Image 1 (cartoon, helix red, strand yellow):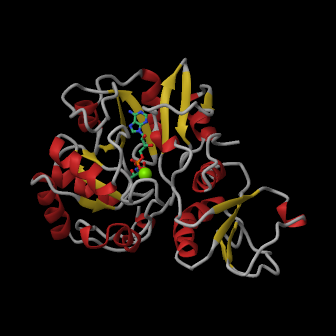
Image 2 (cartoon, rainbow, N blue to C red):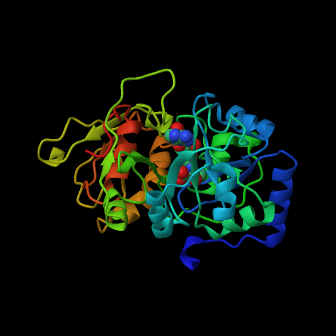
Length: 333
Ligand code: TXA
Ligand code: MG
């Protein structure tokens, strides 16, 4: 799929990256959602390096990326029939499945959980790396823990500076928000993190009930720490603007910044960025993290973000906006 790759990556670079992974090192891998910090999923030391570089708490498990179902069965013990429908419909693609794990998988990858989160990426460069390496790749988003996920090589560089591992730069990511995380449960599917695949798409493909997980009381061992209240966050304070705010706006100041969904903002005193001029949710998702980063770096004192319409990938965007603001305990509403 041509539209997924803005920049060519030579086969020599892919083979070099595979060699780094085999030697227990890390590389940065483009995917169709966001860039990932990649390690050999079966090398416990390499996996530990991922946690160290991200500053990620050891209770927060990683996603394992597989090339095909042959690799899938090396990490997952069982694939329920209901989940096969999801695999047929959405793999390769931005859908992560939570499945019973195989004991051979190092415990660090899954943070000691009995399940593994696994996905088959669609991005051709990720697939070429998986093929060249020849095994499953553990890869969280390539950002420091709790921060905004990177959707370009430049954003990865900003996260890790001189510590940045070799980056396979394939240009901007197509979806721009992370994969949807789904767990089979009580005859249906529970969405642990809304993402690029929508709940409606899952319901349509499977004919089963699909629901977004509601708020959980905080525990020491969250089942999906991506659901932590404060996550995907800029360094500046973020404030949500609810629908209808334009008719009675808060009092803005000169050093405020605004991330608007679509055009039509008048008289804002500070920097304004627009997610999608034509009001497309897909385009908004693609631009979300790049523009949030720009505003974060603009010297703004506060960043106001406008909620987007709730349909489709809108619930993933609003989920990330709320988490950026530190109020994200009720996804998808
Ligand atoms: O789009 C994506 O999913 C990107 C690209 C690189 O693939 N990856 C990504 O990974 O967003 P990360 O580590 O930033 O987020 C993984 C999320 C975390 O919230 C983690 O808690 C959850 O997946 N997770 C991992 N294993 C899990 C499990 N066994 N059960 C429930 N949640 C799990
Ligand atoms: Mg992440």
